[in-house]
Image (cartoon, rainbow, N blue to C red; front, side):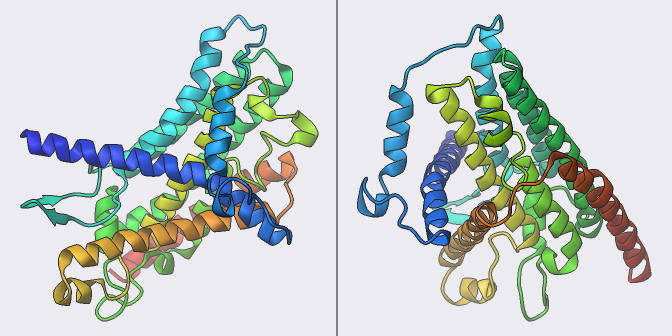
Length: 349
């Protein structure tokens, strides 16, 4: 393993982590701006032009707030809970292909921290560990409302992981791979020989199920039953302050960014865009691939906007409705989709 390869991967990893944190930070600003637009008001506009410095002001406020601990015998777990939530949110980005190769300094630089054959399994494994961050934080708070919020969050995340995993099986039956890089390559082109090559046209039901489960996994409205103030005050992070509270909030927005990236990669062509092959042949490979990176981030921003649009449009479910949707509607739908996909693959093989 040469030093150039180590430097290349180090730069990619640091860049991916930095982009994830920047998106998580400015998603808080975008959330307020979208809410203001939908509610016909201004939103943050004091700190910087258009309120662009508001996330920095919020971060400074969290750093400077008083650090306090509840009367808990589990002080270590109380501290480590937000760390687990934040770490799992950042670790998921390691297997995401952010673009095709760039030819720089005489080398082909892969825009992916690591390409493993079981990328999807890795993502589901890391997501399942994220449940512990929420559960440990709520339990170690020594507060019954925090514990109730943690139990709600953990149960809904575990429940919707089942439907999410089943929705992926039908897609994997068609693609034949667990590698996100390979799934991206298979969706190259949009017209010509590969009409409608994006997986959303081939597996619309899988996309719909995965999208709904992504809302539940990220604890976003209408599935934010773990944090509903009218029932559980602040939810599982009620007893947290300063940057420990900030870690939980940042983890939610980082998860929203990563889930949007996974949706774009699995179903909306990843970094591919119409005319990418023509651009590579006539303008240059690097230019075409840089536009591919831009196309992927446009798709990600579209999904993030959709998350926020839904939050300020649809009212919160009751908890029994949440569980009914997951266990009695989405899971049977995912199983039916697997059966239909299997029949179609055998019939049109």
